[in-house]
Length: 219
Ligand SMILES: C[S@@+](CC[C@H](N)C(=O)[O-])C[C@H]1O[C@@H](n2cnc3c(N)ncnc32)[C@H](O)[C@@H]1O
Image (cartoon, rainbow, N blue to C red; front, side, top):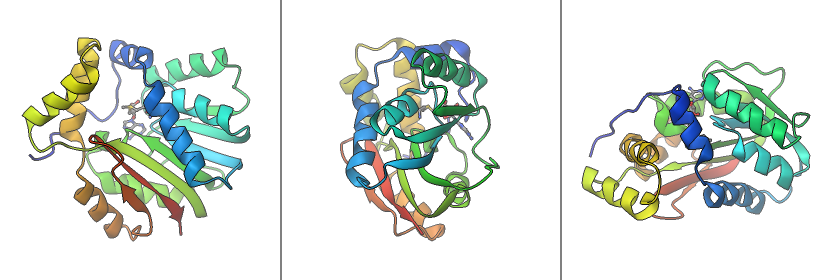
């Protein structure tokens, strides 16, 4: 099945609110725990969260790693408003900065020490732009953890994944999940993207039936 693009930025208020209210605890905490497992030596520094959405991952991240500060970047004003509310409610405004900007062309005062990104890549029409920006925004030797959905082989299989993992979720969330699966990349496509950007030292893993994870240090 070929990739079917979905809108790049999640601009719709209701869609963003439904996403923010959904229970991603297992996935998001698992993502933060994976970062700590991969990089036990990374205990301080400036970390980017590219496509941070409603801010749950930055909040979990700084709670787990009190020496780090995070800049969350998202091009959706509605998402950044929700993230700002969540960060304030958590009392973490001094450690989490939010920027409502596209990742492509983002400017930093100095390159960051690490980057996280969960579920952003499938939104981008040109995935190479993401890997290019990652190289540009990080110091040599930085720590990278990127995760996203795997594209199933057929629409029927995508529907089966939605039914298996999101049966009890609101219709908007099930529809978004289905569309995201159709827009996602296969493991081979991600490996080709890394090779094209000379990032083959980053390793790709497929931890379950619907995700890929890329990790490693950026040189
Ligand atoms: C599926 S959400 C994931 C949010 C968050 N990372 C999480 O795991 O909960 C993808 C987010 O990426 C944002 N996004 C899409 N394209 C973007 C771009 N070019 N630059 C910055 N953010 C973007 C969307 O607005 C959306 O909030």
